[in-house]
Image (cartoon, rainbow, N blue to C red):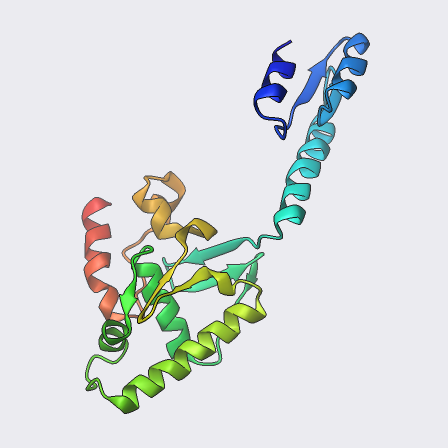
Length: 202
């Protein structure tokens, strides 16, 4: 039986039987199938089985759903709840990291982007550290501090943990492509170059 072969290869695979034959129920139970539905399976039953699978997975990993919006104003949602920032520079720092698409950025480079007309000195460095601390507090409160990847003198974000409209645009996702109206991170002057690149692709 194909299901048994799949289980032998990958024991934790989820298999739901949809069949007209009751006689297959016992073998399904013996091989630890995830679910067993009799035909015709209705949408409610299918939804219940899928909710069980993905609900258990989320519970086991305790992962948060992080969605980031870069078109039409920068925003981050954790489990569909909008994150608020006490300091706008902390929010801008996160936007800057999202713009980097997982590539790291040094402290000096981040300061140059966030404070274009300021000299990089001890005072500015201390200010940056306070902004970074505020960003970490905000993410920690939401349970997603692991989104930040900190190096010795650099920062990045773990792009594998987020669903981001601009990343989806790059992948050619039609919903993201339609959502783009020339408004990528429009509040930040340092994003103009990438906004131009999106315009060329659109």
